[in-house]
Every structure is written in C-alpha cells, then in structure tokens.
Length: 441
RNA sequence: GGAGAGAUGGCCGAGUGGCCGAAGGCGGCACACUGCUAAUGUGUUAUACUCCGUCAAGGGGUAUCGAGGGUUCGAAUCCCUCUCUCUCCGCCA
Image (cartoon, rainbow, N blue to C red; front, top):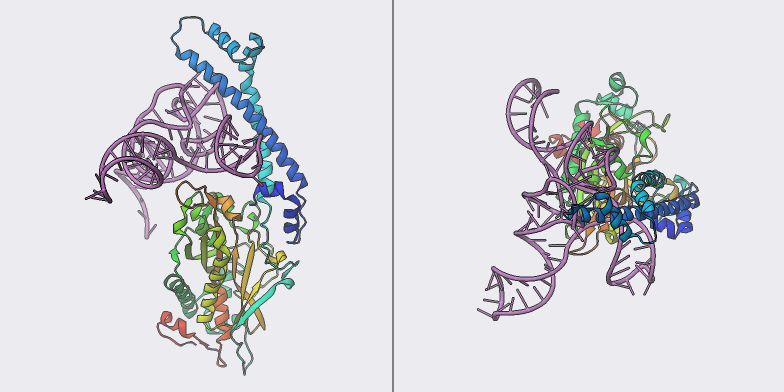
C-alpha cells in the first residue's frame, strides 16, 4: 500500500512512477474521492465533538443530587451551553444528534472503504535504480556465475532423465491430483529432502537466519498484509474454513511482524522457512506444461528480512547473495538479472531474479526472485520499528527471496548433472545429505 | 464435539453507564538527592487519523479497552453475533 499523503501531495510524480510499470494510473479521481472523504470525516468528527460535549454536561448535572425536575435541568444546561438558541432548538438538537451522526458515520465508512479499495489495488512504486521497461525483454543482466557444461551426448530434459530413473512420476501425479502435480519416488524424494536440509543449514548456520516452520494455511488478513489479497485471489487455493493455502512462505513469515512495533536494536530480523507452496497458476495455461517447472504444489526455502528503512537496499544485496550461495554450493551456473519496472511483482520496489542454466532448454530459467518491498507490505501490516524511548514509530521495510525453489533446483541438478548412461551425479555439497551417495542410477 | 471461565496500555492488574485513554503496581525515560552504587523523591511514559501552525515547536478534535452490530443524550462497563485464549470432559496424529 502506498502512502496516501504521498499520493495527495505528489500526485503526478506517483502517477508517473506507477505508469512506468506499464499500466497507466490516473489518480485524479482518487484524489478527489480522498478529499471528499476527509471533508466528510471533518464534518463527522465535529458532530461527534458536539455530542460528546453535550453528553458530558448532562452527565455532570445528573451527578448533582438535585430534586428538581430533570427536564428543567436539561433546559438550564442547554441555555448555558449555547446562547442565542431557543430551548426548543437545543432540545431538538440533543434528540436528533444521534440519527444524524449515524447517517454521517455510515457515509464516512462507505467512503473509507472506497478509498481503501483503490489504495489496496495500487502496486508499489519502483525504486529509482530499476530499469524502465514494458516486459521481461527489458530486464537487465547483472552478472553470470559458472560455466555451462559441454555435453558430448544428447542432452535430455529433466522429465526424461527423471522418468527413466523412476524418480519422477508425472503419471502418478496426474492420477492422484491432475495436471501440474508430480510424485517423487526414491532418490528423487530423497534429493528433494536433501536440498531442503542443505539450504536451511546454510542459511541458518552461515547466513544468520532463524528457521521458521509456519502454518501452511493462513487467514485473509494475513494474505492482505503481504499484498496477495484482495487483488490476486484467483491465484490462491481456498478452503471451506476461511483459510487459504499459502502461495509462498513469504506470506506467513513476513506477517510475523504484523501489528508489531519492534525495537530497532533487534533489527534486522532474518527468517528462513521451508514450506510447500500452492498456486492455481490461473493465468499460465499452456506454459511449462511438461516437467516440474510449473506445478500447483512445490517446495521452497524462503528468506525473509525485516529491516530499518535505510538498510533495506543493503539487505537486498545481501539476501540475493545468500540465495546465490546455494547455487554456487551446488555448482549450478546461473545469472542475476534485475527486473524492469514492467516485469516486477505487485509489492516489489526492486527485484533481482536468479536464473539457473538448464541445458535441455538451452537457456537460463528463474529459480529465485528476491525483492525489496520497502514499506509497501509494512503499511498494510502496520509493522513498525521504534528507535529508542519516546521515538515515533516508523514503518519497517520487508524483503523476501527464494533461497531456493526446491523443485526447480531439482530440475537443474537432473539436467546439469546428467550422464551419458542416464544416471545423475550428486553435487558434492549434497552428498552428506544423501547418505554419502555420489550418483542416482 | 460438550461444559465452564476469560480477552483492558510494554507487562501485571483495577474498573458494571457519565470529567475513563482508562486507578494502582512493575518496567522504561528525565530531573533532583546521594562520596560511588543502591535506595528515595518528583515528573513523564499508547496508537492512528485529522485540523490549526512553516508537513517547526506546540496546540485542538476524533477514534481505539479482542472484532462487528445494538440500546442510550452518553458504553471499557448493558444486550446480540463472531473470533481467540484457558480449564475440564470426549475424540484424535
């Protein structure tokens, strides 16, 4: 969510920044609406103040032990409060102030939710360092790491490698649950578990993150906090109990600071979590229909950092580096790109994608996405920090990134480490987690 | 699933219709006192929005006592609904 004051005071500038994401945003109607809302708020509050003043006087009078007729007292006090008005007028006011207030409050509430509806649908402002562009073709490569291997035999896609080895079973997944579900068997299942352990161990022991195991189902409020709701409901799986399945661990883990004011001295908070992720992939019909690349359910190890505002860009570099370390440890060639304005997610101010080399596709594919959301999520979540006693609370900055998507890492290993005989060599770093085995065959 | 109890400020805990945004205590902060520390005294210590003010200092207003509705001139207090927590019983990995 954007700062209303910013929209109010620098409307054109905000429009310009938003429009760089590709879709034009005309905020003039919003500004008018918001202005009317504030006028109504002032009117309402003035009436509330009047009601409170009158009620207080009545209370004072009733407290006094007077035998006299109550209505006499009322008239007396009313004359005292408001000179120049007749008793009848004032008596009338007391009696009608309630209904009038109720009408005003209802209208105000209606306008507030209108304002809120517009506001919660606006994406974050891109950071000034983000390249402007319409789509992924405008993304900019930052650097590459590792050398794609030369194969002296025909390279197989991971679905062929995995199926031949009997460790990926797409038919079984389809039978149990339908398209975009897969069953991992034997070494495949173990490899997946090994990757999760490796990633969590590195992030907790070497990168200083605290491991979290959050709920996999969360409330709408929680999804609102990180920006998935109200706009992206069609991407989510719902249940019959007002709980929805998480599309990423970012949702429950970031919401840990919702409605909190954290002491600045405890920052940054660094959390890592393995969770399954559930996505309907509603808009992805026909894309990546084969293989493990795009599934309705996949495992991911997530990195989340909660920082002071001035530290968040430093933290983005650090966090992205942590994700890169996993790829380096697994000796998988990758590159880092910075997403352009038009390709970024809803809540992000700046995003780096890590793309791993997939030899069968002959190109780099996304395996991690690391974003700084600045105060966008914090404002929705009311997540704040306080710098010492008496200081005003300020909004935190939130960051998240995959470290890494487990299914896609499995894909990368199967493709990059495949051998001429159809077996797959296990990367050195992973062998301790695979009972010392060096190869899946 | 059944029965009961409860939800108040950073924490503990009063408050059953009216100067209550909320007593008291603890904790925090400031100042005073003290040879140092300890102790003591005094003051201070929620958040958001909004208006005035130079989006300064500061001041005014409104809302918030789990959430939402209702009664009332007036609700932390009364009524209804919901959520959550705790205790006991049942069930269960």
